[in-house]
Image: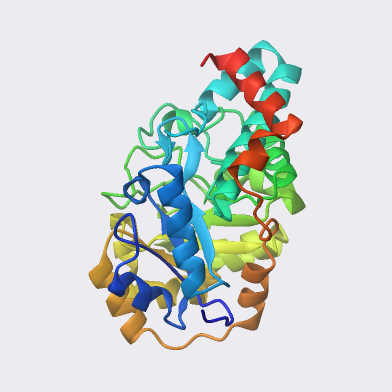
Length: 344
């Protein structure tokens, strides 16, 4: 087991157990994180074995997953609660504000409790995009079309996450909901002005303030602001997010293998562009060949400020296990509230 300062690259693993190539990549000094997907899950025992294998290689590694609820939930069986899409919580808000905040906190608590019981540090949630009804890739992953509702429900979700020992990551800054194109397969372009974006889509990032532990920018180009996608733009990340909004948490790039990142060049060029623009950690997923090239060709990075931010994300620490979690009255109450509200 090797312990060292976290590197700026988060990558994935191929299957249910670590291969020799996985171990080599995780052990690389540029690696600082591992992101898991549905293909890495068969059951809880296997998942816990996998996270232990990762810790055995590097006990300083950050293990993350996209586990939002609704259609973006990587683990769904063997005891994992089926979490509602965030859009359902937005609908509940319009029926009963108090109940919506209470249930949303419960969703955050259950989400984080179950992941932490399997030694996963972070879920890339909440989605802070607005639901304009035009983006299929966002859709009901968003809480609502109103930035005020989005901010209030995200704050409740973040509270639940933190109560269970997990940080949060707001995404996709400054907003992906207005454009129809999916940045996984296209390069979305949002022609609106800076003032319009800041006065609507980006408002939750301003209002949530210190309650945001991390942010993931969008692979969207806003040409009236910068010719580069937001995740490769110093104007968006350094001037606006860090400067105007005084955000001092971790900035994760979105996946560099997505089509939306291709505007920044090949994977090595894009990684350096993202880090130079203000990202602390870059993600490369679903492309082992590109991950190998990135680790082989990327220049060494020793940004102690970024390393500090990553290392001190809230919630990383001792794991108590599934059985102890099940016995917690807080977990039982939160799970029961979700079942009573949404069925199951």
